[in-house]
Length: 296
Image (cartoon, rainbow, N blue to C red; front, side, top):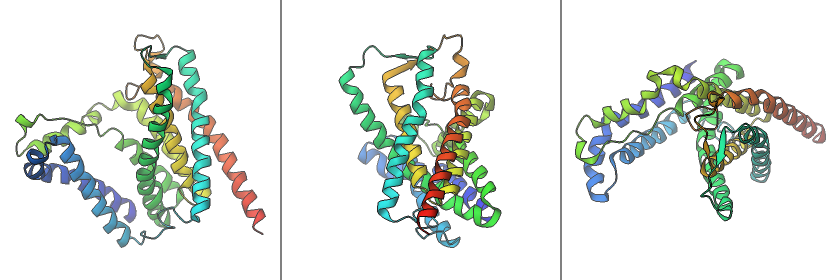
């Protein structure tokens, strides 16, 4: 459990850094660079997490490529990642089609068809960046550290819960004229306000936890995070494009099936996760078995 406690402490330290250092940092950089307070606070938190991550990874013996999930040769890693992007997109499309078929999402009439390709490229780019950062931290170092001490099951569950929880640290804004010495604390309180009403985020939280469990299982099967990054990026890409080109039908009789978190995930997507989970686990189990037989 020591590794889990280290990483939880790292997350708490990152949040504490926002409360303590966001205001002094904004006094130095905000007026000069004309940067909003919440952006300065976000950079402070990210810097604290990065420094802490390096320290924790070294202390726990997780600073090598294999421990971080990058044990595959570069070409094989990129191949597995690219394949997983395709699988991520393909596995998400059926449930997205169902959302439109049921009328839970409606196309935006103002979106030209020529812009869709740009949305796809933008979604894929942002998906890869998000997946690279989150998977290196969660299914890379954190998974390895917890698995070594407490087993793969604990690593899968713990990383999935943390993965889900981090999605509800919302962006809270404070106008420049209202910023004072306590604004870091106020910003942090606003960012965590979603947790004050857990039932309001339950559907999205369970959905994201299910996604995290699936990614953890893939991590265990493959022994690296190439597929995790690709699947994650593919899913983010699809959700990003859907949100840019359509809107949630709020007044729909079945509207409860879609979460207000992003208008895409929710109870319907949660029910879809075991289906794609079975398919992906079966696919990677056979792929690993085939590669093992070929190497003999």
